[in-house]
Length: 150
Picture (cartoon, rainbow, N blue to C red):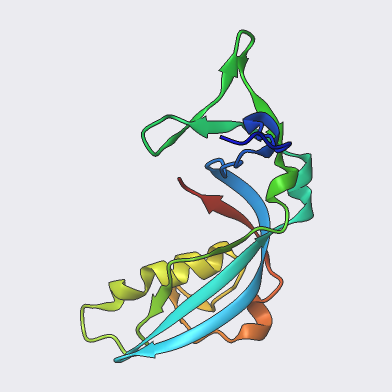
């Protein structure tokens, strides 16, 4: 083996896994795809600059393909959330069935709940919510708390 001047220090050069958690974010991409009689809404969220003020768990490999929070003699270690700012995450798609068959309105529950959580107000009358096919303009830029799961 021929020696060279390169070194690798896991503490400095290693991969920093994304810790499971809730991060301030905003919607910056909006796509709608058609599939049979449904619409699939795919959104991309960007973690906001405010994440830089967060303290999040420092994650390390558990040796089995997963991650655990690193700890020392003083307990669990946290790091700045600065490395999260600007990261993009896509949702898994939210389905809207514009004309559900009788008894199948339940198919739109996730659509309603997802967009209401983002701050979209659907008109309602006596508990009956009237859904609409959303367009890009009222959704892009909406602030939210983005969840990330390992």
